[in-house]
Image (cartoon, rainbow, N blue to C red; front, side, top):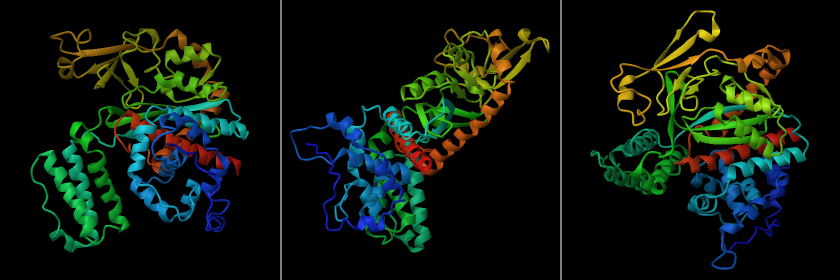
Length: 483
């Protein structure tokens, strides 16, 4: 059964909150700013309403996850801090003497209650509605960009992941007490995953029960990380590193394994839309969705500000047809007029190279044609032919026996004439200067809210993580603008 949380805390100690949680406390301000009943309304169909024992109130469970996003703590650590931090208990709607939940309840809540909810769009929509209601969202411009999140389980094998985390735990223990090295369980020397899991379980048990330093903060974090890896993700470790994560390119010589979050943000720095994809997806292809989501959230988008990745021909045509100004500089390497397989070969603006349908990046490029004659010049991109020979998608792309594989694009097209004139105007140049704001927002998500690394595996997991992180940064921004 499910019961909605009572807003009135009946406790002889409730007056403590007025003493230790001041009016300018961020959690008190969020509680007063946001009506969280929308969570109850959204999730009540996920519970049995007339049978079984009472479930933990979904609003309180959601607030636990929001605290995780704000303070970047693990399930275990957020529950532990909730035992003694009265600002947490006040935010959670608990009496000072109330017991906290078991950390495993948060995992179940994510998997059972939130998995079929479009949490990302719902939470962004709520914050945009709130910003409009408070009359702090006034612009009709959005700034667009993408940020990457590395997979929790990268391209290392499950065995390597466990060994790396066990090593970090041992290292933290040795810095506290060198004598424990002789008492540690014997390290696993085989390459069998089951043996490594068994060793990690022994290591965790030893540190918790016999080391005497399990509660030292320097040891707690790596201990909890290894313990959660073994207990919560043991099934995932047996299957694969991360089935949804893909390799994306940040530059010609650097790559990452994980996901991309494509963001739209107003000039007031309120995020109005997000699309989360696997790491290899092209930034520019998400622009139309970001505009439509921003409009659906309550914006009236008249101007889009972005980098060269968003100035491809389809986006110019879309924004022109919808009477939207596209403040994104043209790049002759991306915005080509006519080229073959336009939807299959995508340009990576960070690396300056095209990527084939199989996800392989060109190794070099060369310009052909007479200099100064725009439409007669071509850029030719060369791919590693040895990879092409064994590629599962080579049919219709690679000709058997060919000594090279290239992809050519012509420079400049008639569709870009107006855009070229527009980007020379003073208005374009002034609006372009607003783009730095989204770089700062990406940094805030990563470095203050743990969005640089996924906390779980799979696309669903990163979507939940992204939803909570964006909800948190939007609420913080609204509080700042209200002040």
